[in-house]
Length: 245
Image (cartoon, rainbow, N blue to C red):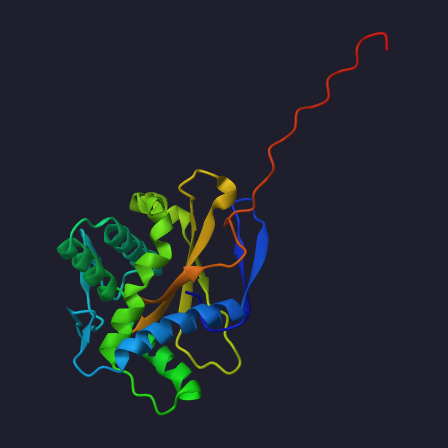
């Protein structure tokens, strides 16, 4: 889902081209869908969601495979670990495996920032509403795997390849926004069909929470298929005129 805002982002392609993407009402609508879903669970008092125990998520140092994701971990490293956890979530063949993959996603989220954004929206629309922090965070993170499920084959890459493919950008500041420093991690996702024209550009929004880079939001850059500027293949030169003509 896209951030609630309206601004331009630009990225540089391999050929040095620059392109702009406008993020506006679409992001607001998608973010609101998740918030409504979270709100449906947040009104309960038993701290359960769909019959599952809802953990109290805090930001801390975690290990993903042999990578320690501490305060020195980069946005790319955190985004890569999250995408791999989403892949394992989608491919899970048992409830325990799926819960373990979801736990890894919760370990990489920014819980206070997620809940803060949720409260910010509801203060304007439903000021009397009191949400449960843990259920809200759980519901939002639980939506991330379905968001990227179609593209999980794109996550079967080694770190060295993923690092080269990812683009990191600073989030442009809004005049009325005093939010902490945030960054986007953009990565091109191949369509399972193999059709290059059906690719998509994923956008993960990361924020500093407790000194750690952690994920606030996931979604796609609307109207964008590729990160790099695509150069049409050269056409063959016209055949030489027949001699004597």
